[in-house]
Amino acid sequence: MSLHVLLIFAATYLVACALPGPTVTALVARVIGKGTQGAFAFCTGLMAGELIWVASAMFGLALLAALFQPVFVAIRYLGAAYLLYLAWKLWTAPAAEPGEGRVSGREGVRLFLGGFALTMGNPKTMLFYLALLPTLIDLAHVTVGGFLEIALTVSAIYSVVMAGYVLLAARARRAFRSRRAMRLVNRVTGGVMAGAAVAVATRN
Image 1 (cartoon, rainbow, N blue to C red):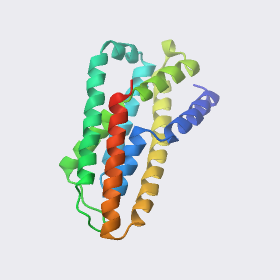
Image 2 (image 1 turned 90 degrees about the vertical axis):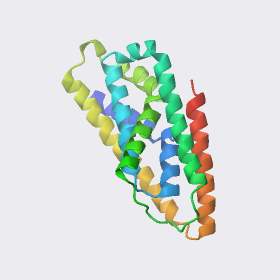
Image 3 (image 1 turned 180 degrees about the horizontal axis):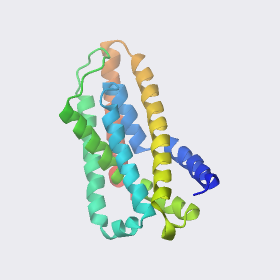
Image 4 (image 1 turned 30 degrees about the horizontal axis):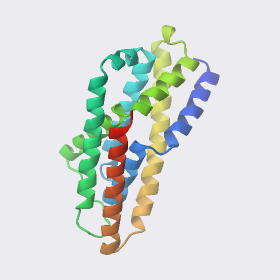
């Protein structure tokens, strides 16, 4: 794959990745409500789903995925259900002063799976790759090297963008110091998370 083509893909993907959607909304709401602990596991799950969609688009598995639409609909609803669970946890969280709570290994696994389900159930992600990659790459002659170049580009850009959102959300979280303010933050972020869940569940 030529450097020119790779740079065009990287620039387009950066813009698409930086635009807020359900995944960014869920990440920001959780960091503001709970802190940065667990953000890495959640982002890793999001990226894992992203890379699977890259592989699906490049190796033709997306066409096969279309044949199993009910499975992906179920995954989408699982992702929405997990967001609703996070929304409930945020809404009912005690109004403690902002701090960084620890995340257990089991909770980290749940966050990873939640992020993974959220990305896998997002039709926008699949359509992005199906619409973009065929215009840049001859998918009939894709090589392992070409796939690795795209996968590494996606991983690098996605990591930087998500890290930026985590840092911005963490800074916003530090602006709230009182218990009353944290109660308001918990309620607002819980409501935003619930809204993201509805958006994921109802998107076609």
